[in-house]
Amino acid sequence: MARMYYDSDANLDLLNGKTVAIIGYGSQGHAHALNLKDSGVNVIVGLYEGSRSTAKAEAEGLTVKPVADAVKLADWIMILLPDEVQRTIYKEAIAPNLEAGNVLLFAHGFNINFGQIVPPADVDVVMVAPKGPGHLVRRTYQEGQGVPCLFAVYQDATGQARDRAMAYAKGIGGTRAGVLETTFREETETDLFGEQVVLCGGLSELIKAGFETLVNAGYQPELAYFECLHEVKLIVDLVVEGGLAKMRDSISNTAEYGDYTRGPRIITDETRAEMRKVLKEIQTGQFAREFVLESQSGNAGFTAMRRREAEHPIEEVGKDLRAMFSWLKKA
Ligand SMILES: NC(=O)C1=CN([C@@H]2O[C@H](COP(=O)(O)OP(=O)(O)OC[C@H]3O[C@@H](n4cnc5c(N)ncnc54)[C@H](O)[C@@H]3O)[C@@H](O)[C@H]2O)C=CC1
Ligand SMILES: CC(=O)[C@](C)(O)C(=O)O
Ligand SMILES: [Mg+2]
Ligand SMILES: [Mg+2]
Image (cartoon, rainbow, N blue to C red):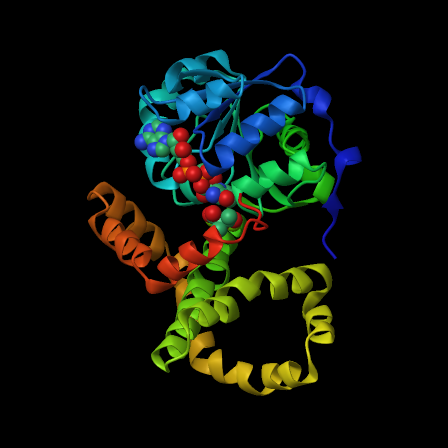
């Protein structure tokens, strides 16, 4: 059983007197910056001139600087930019301003693992990767909890890289929940696989396919939304709390029997073969190459896919229904 590390294993004092620059203020960036600030760490935010996030960060009492200036002022630099733009901004604004002994941090190993960023030998290079969306990294921290994280050391120039990674994980609340040591390669490949096959890609298609099947068969779209989307969280909460066993203990015998007998007809041997193919595309760099080239060519396909998905009927139905749910917690 792999060892988990907690608050008592990490030393936040390693951040005493240090300045941490959070580059990017999006899903993860805002959470890391605010959590570190609330943990007593001196934080500055690095954003590009004219960024819409500047006002948001300043409204939270954070100091915002142009990326290059933030890097110059900082001892620890956490890159929380979109993966597809990190390489360019690193070359233009981060690399020229790094100093020996700095700590360069990532929340996903993509750019190091696929050689898009090659750091100098005199800085520590580590990863602290929350296993959850940024908005929940912030919300759980404010509730006195945290999101489990992975941490990894790619380069230990100072002999303190591992301790520094754990100190950062403590600063964002990760060691409250527990952190697990890994490598940049293992985090990259498993994170890409998880988000493509289970958490985002697979789940989105499953929800849409179920919704479409019911609606096309003439059932009310609102009912299909409740059955195939809204209730997913209620079921998954039980799975997260106590595994598949707890969920199966809580649902009816009818549902449990249907689970065992019809589930394998939905996720078939062909599905498993496709999962292995997707993993191979990640391991060979084929996915990374496709994603980087898509970005470099202006995201035409990505933009079109975003637009078509936003136009899916389930989004319209859901928007109207959620507007009536005063009780629904919004991130
Ligand atoms: N979204 C999530 O919950 C998770 C994200 N990660 C990783 O965290 C990193 C950041 O991802 P997100 O927070 O999702 O990104 P995001 O897309 O939510 O935010 C990125 C932020 O960077 C800034 N930005 C965007 N384009 C820029 C540009 N061209 N130049 C300068 N600044 C720019 C903006 O402030 C933007 O809000 C990535 O490496 C991602 O893989 C890791 C775990 C979970
Ligand atoms: C939220 C998270 O962990 C993801 C799905 O890996 C991501 O947003 O990249
Ligand atoms: Mg992830
Ligand atoms: Mg990810």
